[in-house]
Amino acid sequence: MRKTIASLVIVILAGLALPGCYHIPIGPPTPVEPPKPTVPASAAFSFGSIDVSPLPIATSQSFNIYMEIENTGKAAGAYKADLLINGALNSSQVVILGPGEKRQASFQTSLSSAGKYELKIGPQSRSIEIGQPRVPATIKISGDRVDGFDPIVGSTAYATEVHDTIEGHTIRLTAPAEGFIIDSIRVLGYLKSSTHDFNTDPIFGPGIWVYGPDIAAAEPISTQFTVNIYDAKRNRLYSGNFNKDLFSYSPGWVVLNITPTRLAGDFLVEIKTYNPPKLAATGWGNWDPWHRYVVHTWYYQICIGYENSTEVQSFVSQDGSPVPERYLTYNWLIQAAGYRQ
Image (cartoon, rainbow, N blue to C red; front, side, top):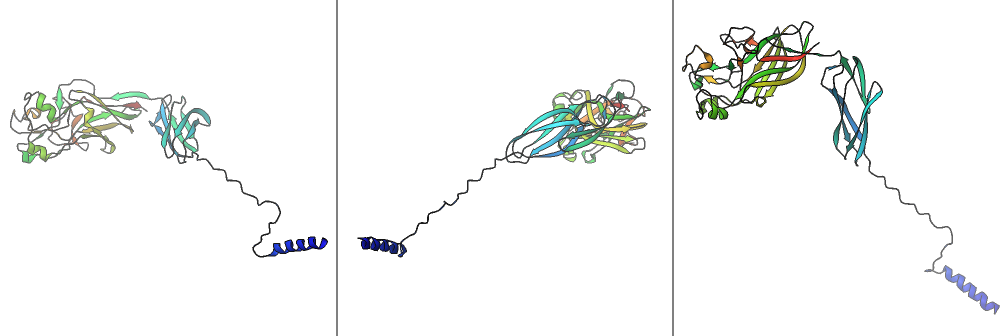
């Protein structure tokens, strides 16, 4: 019996070593790495420079502060923009942005004391200077008479003589002794156009066609007019273009806001209207330029007030200089507005 059991054990052990048989070791299990956590998408922000307007700034004057913020991240987010002035919190604004979206943080404030100030929003900063209070002023030639309107006319007898004139109205004004910062021009005038005049022309009557296609082809339409400001030596200090649609078909005041410009002594304001009507040398006579026969009235002419006088404070001009032998435009109706320094 003992031999039988021993033989059986030997057979079993031998079988474990035979090919095709497997040995399963007994020991600790192989460790399994846990899954890595997913990082959620988040917002990230970049910042533009701080902009301020309008400039210059005076005490107790409201001004605007802007800074562009962009979300450069992959998820929507909110940025709390704090405006600090000289290190003190002035106001806050929360800007909500989607991925890739840009938006401005904007603030409006005023400061009661003159001096230099440091603005800070997020990582950006800027210095500004607050000046003394402004005293509003309007500079004009005294008087408000309006006898008529002068489109600055050029005379011609034939369509072949039509040329593009760039003459303008210029008026000479004088700044206050302490200096002047001009920020707007006031103009009393009105707009003429062929479409309007075809139906309502006050001289020839409704429905009278007052220009020819040959002249229209020779003179292209200009929808813009130009404002120039010169010092007494004809140095140009400012130039800007405006759309003629600011005017209507009835005389009225139009305010043209310009970049604030410091002036001293005499200065010139020139308005170049472009596309003036061309007149024939025949008609009601050469003695009165604005009564000559109108060959055409093309689109977008601006007519500005004149008065029949030899006043030299105002004149027909090219680049601020008088045009020889051109009728003077005695003009109360161009004014300079701004504030004393």
